[in-house]
Image (cartoon, rainbow, N blue to C red; front, side):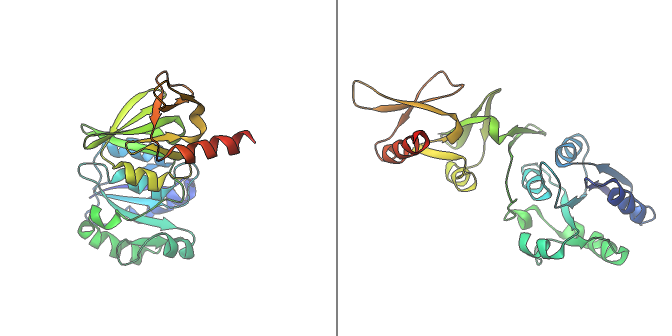
Length: 241
């Protein structure tokens, strides 16, 4: 069994590595100091189990778990936390194993024995406190884009195109799921498009009566449907007042 220990605290990682040192059936133990590095290592090397701290700066453990789900063969996730109350709030204990710091070896061994029985389906409902990245599987790799770099999402048949400052990314998410997850940062302007609130620059009315929105960093304007126009205008007015 190959295990990855993810924690921003060096002492916590060292303690976990010590606990795993003489565990049967553990063939390899690696460590990562943050969520981004963890995803890079998971991409590069297949792991069976990820021991994932919930509270980390930047990308927290819950967001890491969401991105792990995009992998073709995701490893089993076992969360670690210093605050049992936060663990209870974050996920269903019947679905996901967790370890409270300081980690007890008996509890660790118990979860490792059952780790292979946990499936990716059992972590699909996990919601990070605040997602900071979108992700998509490109072949065997996982590509990450900071949410703040995304200009807009546009539905394109069964996929969603994310247009960001460094290019484009095809997502398997639905536009509705993206709207639900990122409603604080994105506004629906059409049945097939969401735009970043902080990217909205101006509105332009065309000769045919249609209204388009210009976004910072995007050359082509996007059409606003009549249904969504009042909400967009209200937002622009509120920002200018």
